[in-house]
Image 1 (tube, rainbow, N blue to C red):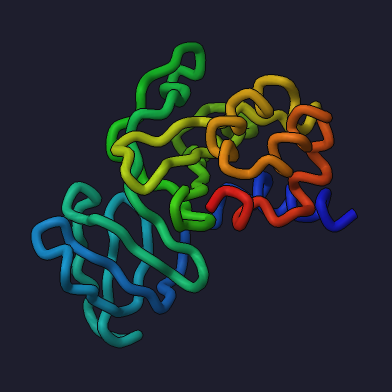
Image 2 (image 1 turned 180 degrees about the vertical axis):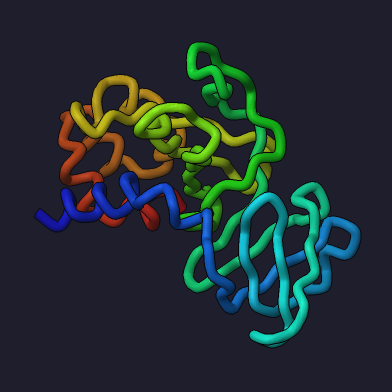
Length: 191
């Protein structure tokens, strides 16, 4: 039961988490000076709006100037190289420098790309994309996952290269016991 709850929380967090309407405490880094972490009250929209005080003026930073940002427990970083739907919804494109929610990091980073609901003319945006990226790689790999079929064959095959150092996890993948894999704390399994 905990594994199912973990999957639901990890994969089906409402799409509006990233699109905040109110300012929240947070930090961000600019591309020009990545070694300096700045803080303030942040709001994401067409740009990253930053206030130093609740009643103060806001400064708008274009997204192309932002390297990463964090509000509350959510940290967003840039990722490239994964396949995503374009705005038409009928074709795909390779993502280039898109912000993704960093779920866990270490030797392998686990991330989730969430489509911006406002850009799609449907009742629901496309589903989120789960991504894995090794620390020494420049591009993220999308992991096929369906809420309806759980960790199917494509999911297992995509995950296998990331768990080669763990014979116990390879055995779980081979036995198709993905519920055991997920309850074994997926984050630590990928490190």
